Length: 406
Image 1: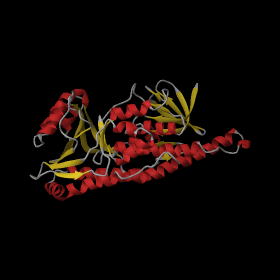
Image 2 (image 1 turned 90 degrees about the vertical axis):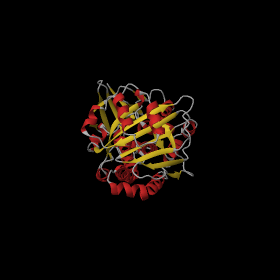
Image 3 (image 1 turned 45 degrees about the vertical axis):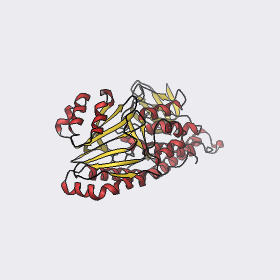
Image 4 (image 1 turned 60 degrees about the horizontal axis):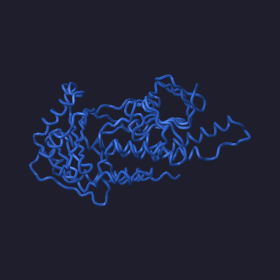
């Protein structure tokens, strides 16, 4: 027996749950398929810039999250290559916070009807079925849907169906962690970042007790032995922090083994976003399925939130408009609705294409500059570019995805 849905979203991550909540706010039910048996909390935390908070406000959860995460006043950028004082760039006039991913996903999920997320539901194939798409799940379930949205990450089944290649490895990897200091960490609220010698590291408090940290570097083949061993990962990070202030070492040292993870950094080639099918008929992608990017702008999760608001708005405009001419029968009604959905997803793709290209390209360029180990590039970065790059980050964060109203 086939189950018929109006909207099916593959993936209960940031983009998927934001889209689902946006649709729910507009009176449209969606079904979210998650391959895991619970919400996947990977990455621990991420920087949320002003553009992300506009998106969170649009779906109605901004205020509750603000109460649990402190405002970041500035960033301190220090060089491990040149012996010079750290430069401080103020975030005055901007809203930047370090948002715990677990709290974000749980907040999004709690705002949805209890039957919205279907866990342990892995999509294995997608087929055409008239004006619908038919999904086959690993447990034998078959679903039909008017709208199919892929928010299933860098290894997206839906992106593959649309013709996208797998995201490419940048040659860099990241280790991320989260430390809890019961009774308070005492580091203040500033974002601290350290650059030089082919490394980029830093830490950012979320609140009085929780601190998020990261290290990105260019791995050798020996690194593969570390990926699944948190003990060795932690030892590896500590070995890379010889020239880094003791505060950073204290944060890493305080991190529990289950709060440290590693991943290769991948991105979508910008020309794929330029020429590829972000949408096709009644199918589209969002979040990391659309624009996987390096973390150098801190905009991956923020862009996923933007996607969710824009996509919910475009789908609602298509589904909530009156249908075709009733006198012509059901088949014509379905065709008219399909055309409206197709146009709605095209509008979404048009709105998100250049924003995605901009963020992916800029993040890649910034990562190259920040992590280059060449002496000339190190000198230019630390003397001149370190003051220019934070301003670029703030300009990218000034984007406004709008509200759910269409």
